[in-house]
Image (cartoon, rainbow, N blue to C red; front, side, top):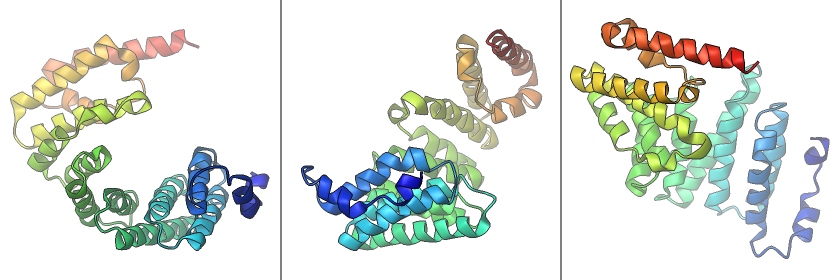
Length: 263
């Protein structure tokens, strides 16, 4: 960490001239490469190290929208990892919002820029859910295949309790981008969509969805191990008690037994 705080960026650029990318882009790539290492521990120190790299890139090319988008995404990620330093967190959010706004100014039809601005509104308590929704909808309009924007548009509608729209929005998310470490999000998406269907009055369709989700977890209990199962638990304790309660209890027992067996 100490080395990164004092990394000589001029020397880095000099030593990477063989990479066929503009200097600002090389710095952006460097920050992205270091993001996992610096986004969680020792905040705001990690963010400050990354922000120094982004700021140097912006100084080299003030009209580079890509670096502003990456800067905003990094600020959102780091701010989400800090809750005991409110002033530092506010500064991260301010920088992230300004970077996303600058990216939109430079490229008004850039889906990633609108998505980044939406995340700055969606992720924090002082953000506007309606503003976040508008940003995600603009991102989808710019790029209908942008899965993250579609997913968070659905989350906004869910949080706004616009149940029929939310159920439809979740249906429009292409699950093919939720692969590898992100697969759990597809299971959560199904659960949230089923909940929206129930709230919208589509009881039979919601029950079918919840039964399908529970069956998937019964076949592969490991998939449910790190899920909160919030909606599934709510319906098992409420309107679908007869259909789900006993099966969900057995699933939890299986998960607990597997955890004990792994100790």
